[in-house]
Picture 1 (cartoon, rainbow, N blue to C red):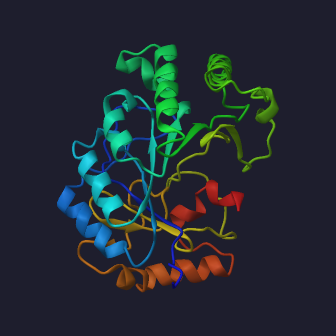
Picture 2 (cartoon, one colour):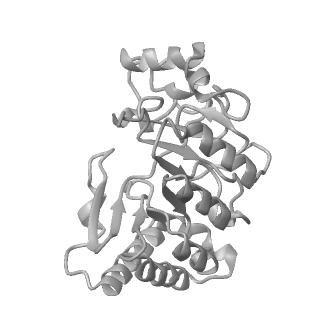
Picture 3 (cartoon, rainbow, N blue to C red):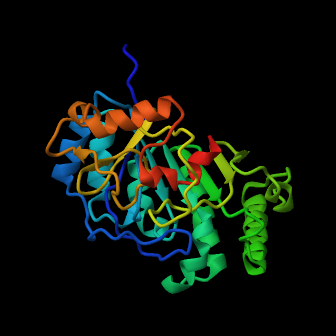
Length: 297
């Protein structure tokens, strides 16, 4: 079998979110939910290019009213589905996810700062995510808890206290005997990520907070590279193809999947110029020059 070009393609089924987290700036795009018909058409068009789709760019995918139908479509076409959520809606969508399980569900526990707006206590939120994980893994798929706020210059004292409570709850829930002490990971070099297996198909992922790129952010210069267009790309909920999952406002639109075949989009002058520049370790797009995440490579 011929190897497909992309390890994964990010598919944003909605750009609407039920939280407003400090680390995730709201998109300037109009709110939109991708229809089941559009999602089906998108899957058909990306089938030759990848086996893995990630339901995430901006927005909260569990808000989608047709989530069950979308998951059934993706599974029916043979895609491996990964899904990233803030975790607040796991209780309401558990039956759908258990009946149509993605390959992996990532739960961003660092979204806890905004959870008070949703009528949940912090502990209720954590316990609901743990209860879901214990039902989901190992029979259905992988659960990966994310705690991506370990930059000691940004993590406030209340955040550190909540991180420690999260780690305590995780150890108790999965009877994990190893170290999950926050101080053991706060000093990780920038760009490192540590995943710890706490139970069968259940992981904790540590990382530093990252800044979403912006045209008004710091310019990191023209030298560097990125994995965008090499092993992944992203498709926004209106069909706009962008080079990576961090272009949450569609600043680098390469084409629209509903109007143009993906092969033609990737062969466009702008896309080819980006990829050629990345391959020569240079950056040609202003947004990419201002992306701190690509400095990790």
